[in-house]
Image 1 (tube, helix red, strand yellow):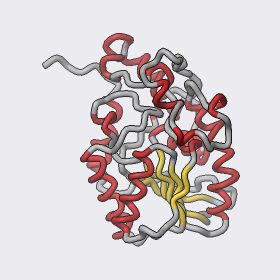
Image 2 (cartoon, one colour):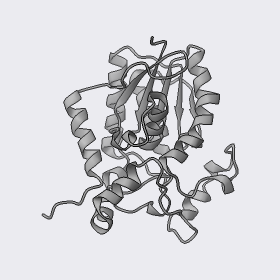
Image 3 (cartoon, one colour):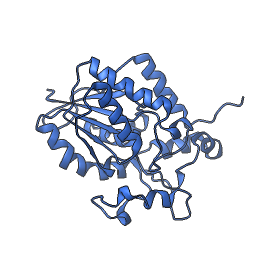
Length: 258
């Protein structure tokens, strides 16, 4: 029996989503289309009668900005926004900044799918020679985390994303839900997928095929144990949602010659 409802949201399209690059912990802004997606999401949630008491985001601007735009469109700008690195996107290590389609051409589509979607495979770690290493690890936003900068990841599998996310879910987000507060989580493709794996009991093999488009709210209905009691519902125009899912899946494929 459903006791709680939570809205889970992958942020609107980012600049590097548009360029089909592994963005990860690089702090890219929303694209023009990403801003429109977030605003449309807010309007949809308002039209469907949703209200929120608290919003949780990552420390990355595209997640935070999406939350702001959603709340603005809902006329709920006053709702508190709580940020944590534990909701950050998966750390793609040495793959950060690379183009997915070019990687598919060089390494094969299956290998790119494994890097992007598998549960247990960790990409090669980032090191100090990487062009974005200093930008990430010298960023002041990571100075006040609940772990030291030396303990922050250098690369992650989806399993490792779930491992660092669960303490935050159990200790911070979950208690807010159980208290009866209405919660929106504005996060990232892989932090959302990791949370879905946990809440819906998705197998290690089946999580590979779970795809979330940007800017599409996902309704989760949970029981007293905060486990899903119904299949997730992607809210909005279902034809457009399926087209957006296919577009995300095609990002890891070789582009046909033109």
